[in-house]
Figure 1 (cartoon, rainbow, N blue to C red):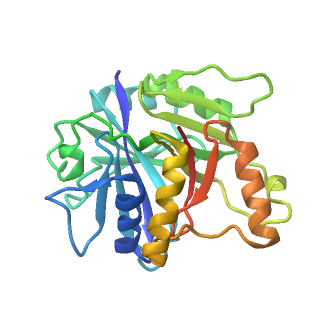
Figure 2: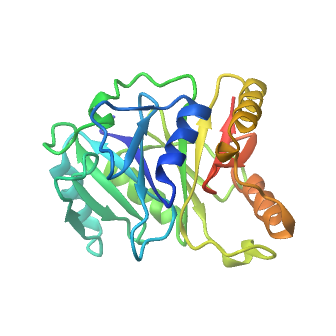
Length: 267
């Protein structure tokens, strides 16, 4: 494949605690070259998950995803040819996972890197491409023009469109391992719950056995309540969970991590 989804990033007030959640619940691992005091990066063997501390002006939650390409100039030539509204920004050397940050025509931000870029370190070098039994299998965002954005990622990054069931408003693009799920954003979907703006929506995990996974979550929660998944309690929480369940057909069990990030799980 010309491109692969190589990382997901979030922002958290409790970034150390959140890293322990993903290590305990999903078996993700940190790198020996991680950056203590700056952020925590964990990985599943294929995808890195960067957990950044929240700074002034930044919102907590899922922030962006990253794509590694075989050749950056080819990707940017394609963007310049068809998408003049798209701009990009070279990232500082302190970012071990992104060479360049850019966005799609709807404004959804993502990172682009190339395997041999000099600032790639930590989990983004350690990942050997062999995913753990529990691993990220899809990344989802909501946007105003999902069909057009699916065309953008297909053209620029050669991601493979997957079949959709009749009536499914989502688009699914694969790098051969991870699916990029592009979902429509409609304010009326948030009737009876808090409105979440367009952008990153959730991450999806594949697990070896769903009942074993649920039992592990219960055990870790009992042993350490600070690792307990966030609750969907109350009418607004129940409405959000119902929206989550009906919006994504890729998972069969939905939860939120201890910081409130939505997670879709399937066996």
